[in-house]
Length: 106
Image 1 (spheres, rainbow, N blue to C red):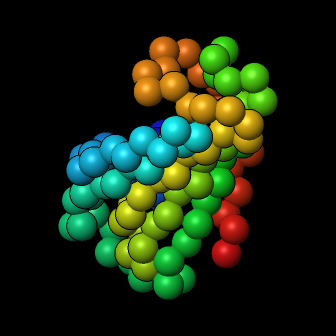
Image 2 (cartoon, rainbow, N blue to C red):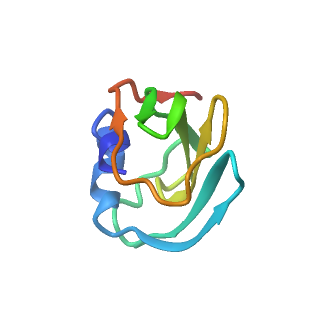
């Protein structure tokens, strides 16, 4: 999460307070749902924001993957979606590289 948040400074204070509620594997990716400390930075933002990562390289996934982070209007992390471009996402990943290119989509 810190890698995604590095390019979006308003998200950085939230990363330390993140707690994973659940992980749902979908074969080609996964969804990670969060519970975050809502007392940090209640500055009103746009009604929900979406951030994407740069390309994620994994030795087990030939064509790589990408992550999309969904944030609510108070910059609380809602969930993270990770998906492969082709093939399956392993249940356990030991090594990966995220190319820096976090982009806010809205």
